[in-house]
Amino acid sequence: MSIISTDISKAVTILNNEELVAIPTETVYGLAGNIFSEKAVKAIFKTKERPFFNPLIVHIPNLEYLTNVVSHVPEKARLLAEAFWPGSLTLVLPKKNTIPDIITAGKSTVAVRIPNHPLSLELLKQLDFPLAAPSANPFNRISPTTAQHVASYFKDKIDMVLDGGSCKNGIESTIIGFENDDPIIYRLGAIAVEQIEAVIGKIKVKNKKATSPDAPGMLDKHYAPRTLTVLSNNILEDLKTYSDKRIGVLSFSSSFEGDNIQHQIILSEEQNLNEAASKLYDALHELDSLKLDIIIAEVFPDFGLGKSINDRLQRAAFSS
Ligand code: AMP
Ligand code: MG
Image 1 (cartoon, rainbow, N blue to C red):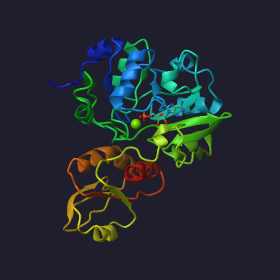
Image 2: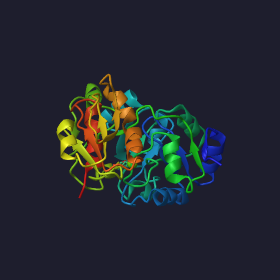
Image 3: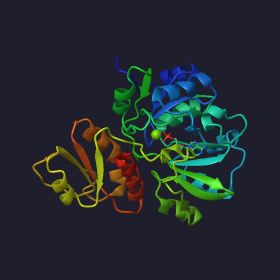
């Protein structure tokens, strides 16, 4: 029997029982468990094969709940929460003592957001605890944007995927931390830097070469297909370079021709970066399933969500 279901009350029962449910959000599917259950949280790490030094994002039902989780809210954090929640923004703030160390990897800060998906908001409303919910993929693999992606990763390991359709944004949340109350972007994501700056003014982006477990989404290799992936500024040139290979092409809006192109995915013929971001992981899942020799992915424009897409593609293509 399929583990995919739309039955919220079944999800409530499983989560109350300290077990895991994969949940839909507007970013990607999350592998959710009760933040106060050591059993559930350990199962999240085990199921994902995620190292314990990677802290988890805490999902809360509404803004009023925030003060149960964090001990201090800088003014700019409040402005951002009011502007973007429920939504694809994660705030890293000083934690309340009640938040278990395993959630924060021993750090004094906790990452928190309100997801913007009707099923998960309803689920959170029916629970009396927040949910830890990292992306529902094995560590370092491509994030899931459909219930089917999750089921193909975890069908023997979890009891249920709550099916909320395809994720609207399709890329992880933008993570913002504070250093002496000054905001800094730890991870580029579904909310563009320009949107953030429209609310709080100029913001720094943390150097992504920093491999500190400060922000594990910042590890160089992440979000990766198993097929060799290269990032290209000139697809025509690279089609020649890899002419002896079976190639998959992932492009923004243009179509390419070549005998060795086995499969090609265009993310947005209208050159809409939001549409491209929402389709990115599904395209990588599809290309990766074809057992090609190489995926050639086009570099995106360096603004708006193009920055976040390039960040993910660089990690997908990272090799060392
Ligand atoms: P995932 O939910 O799989 O996208 O990963 C959770 C992300 O949250 C990680 O990439 C971390 O960078 C980030 N994160 C969670 N807690 C913290 C924290 N206390 N400080 C900094 N980053 C955090
Ligand atoms: Mg992840």
